Image (tube, rainbow, N blue to C red; front, top):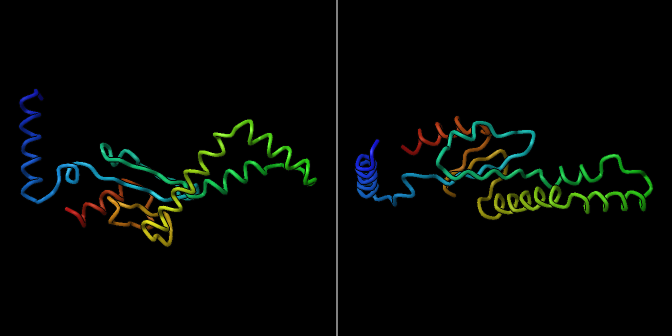
Length: 146
């Protein structure tokens, strides 16, 4: 496709958006947020190619804590020392998942009032519960939002 054809296609898309009363960004790209845990892994992330997809692993805090606590001795002082050493040695490996999980939990509860997971949120407005296959999620969303 040459530049002229691409421009003509873009113009047609903009005219369709205007006719529908939509902003071009709304018609062309979705903002998808997935709230899930390791027991419910996300599949087919490519189903939303070109759209913005954010996955919140809401069990990140529990997984980081379990990793820090793995095989610690029963002695409280020794356990605290070893856990501290682990945290110092791999701070980013622990803090990133915990911060991302906390952000996801806060957003799920405070912004969207989600009461269960997994959940997929489309453009901050439509919630689909119980689906982690994003190909299926896209199909279901498009059935109700043609």
